[in-house]
Length: 501
Ligand code: AMP
Image (cartoon, rainbow, N blue to C red; front, side):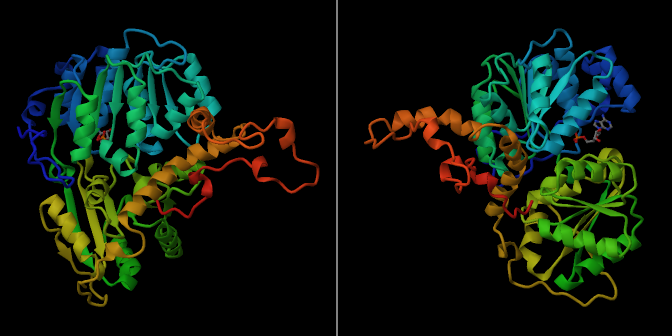
């Protein structure tokens, strides 16, 4: 087995090669040490045997050891931690506001999916969970915590918000899961994660999952884990030999026509179409609706309720096609997705792997088609380098011939770093809206930081009242225009920006 701590690992987000899969072929769920109620739930779900990550991780987690899992979505990694956690937690009960385990997810969608897993696998156990995610009522979440939760599933921003409001105590957390660490890094969540981990008891079990092992991720794993069992499973592009992929080189102005032709030519049961920019999600949605496709769209600026409703319609088969940005689609798990289309070649090669991992899951056949414009040459090369093979070229008859150009399409518009910052801001959006709805004068984080700031500034010369202006002097006169001090302070994320998710 290659050592993932090997210093020779490339700086780039290399995906580790296939390892340790033999165990999975000889074992079944019962042999992994799971209890009867869980085995029953698995049988009802129709899972006949564990996936490689499950076969390797479950016994280790049950023994109380830390795990460093290098695996992507589509490998069954969610069950590899949820199943043994259910067994570990089944023995005792939680106290109010003191969750016994914590699962950190980078996005709301992933958090919801993990929660769904707990409900399904834990249906024969009396365990409860709570979700702390942006865009949902904070008071409901507080109320759930007050009852005592066995499993707390959270996105980092909302967890810190609630912690700072005093609605949560983390000193009873015995099991911590950090899922999709590479995506957490991409979205700028690492400082939040470090803060959260510093609030947890030292003696805990930590399960850490990442699709890739960049140096920064390895640093975190070293800091958070104690003598972990390292488990790597192969990338979906290798696991899912069931994915048939193809790439069409097409002029920018022909992309929508090319997509329509592919959609009509293929036996599309249900498909996700990925766009790089939120604006393009909207344009493509309108275009496909005009051409009478049963299509919906997901992107970060849509209200949560609309996103859920669209997702439900898609799951129910009322919509055949979902046009998405990467963030909105992150981790969406829809059984039997027949096709993935990349309307744009992703800016980050690793997103290609995440995107096509939506199809060809659990042994089913899937199709992944990518439309590449002439300026996407370097982006396509990056994808092919990462996945270790050329994507077969496809020609669509009747469209203008296209040639690769030397322009680097990834440099146009927003750079990748900005995209990530925006992605992150967007994910934080729900939490900020929530904060504004609270009847407090300023964001809670600022209130907490204020005393520190005062201490730091205590030697500075103070004129008049300084920061300590008595409240009565701030009362606004009837009819007076609002003074700056009357306005609710706005955090940088509150600017209602035009964010490309
Ligand atoms: P994940 O990698 O956790 O996102 O899981 C990918 C998909 O595989 C989900 O739809 C799971 O419900 C499904 N899955 C997980 N474990 C198994 C299993 N042992 N057998 C069949 N499907 C599974």
